[in-house]
Amino acid sequence: MQSGGPGMMGKMGGPDGMMEMMQRMHGNMMGGGMMGGMGPTGGGMMQMFDADGDGKVTPDEMRSQLQAKLTEFDSDGDGTLSIAEFETLHSAMIREKMVDRFQHLDADGDGAVTPEEMTAPAEMMERMQMMRSNMAQPPVQPGNGQGMGDGTMMNDN
Image (tube, rainbow, N blue to C red; front, side):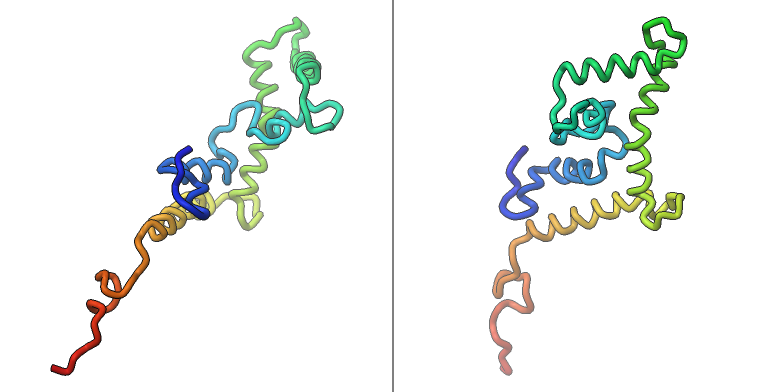
């Protein structure tokens, strides 16, 4: 990530920093993958694999939990997952994240996402871009053409 200068805007990085920050803030609303984000245990999906609850997922824990999922969602009992069975597994795994994302958008908690609530992340992005643009502007100083007049006192002549 590029440096964008000091302060909050610098932490966002270069031109793509704003988008990256918004995606993190909104939980990658349209993506995220099966394993979720990368937190202490790899994110939401990874937490389900932490069998002993120690905050770490070992290869053995993941192997064991994935095998259990295969067994649970192998509806025909053939020891494999068809695409339909995998779709059921995948849907179950991402449901909690999907509900969280829906609830995040449903600002008033009425169980419906209005057009205004749906576009709220874009509105926030626009405000942040304007703030970033304003912070990139040089400060207003007398005599630099950005303040009132040319920096000299008014003369009566």
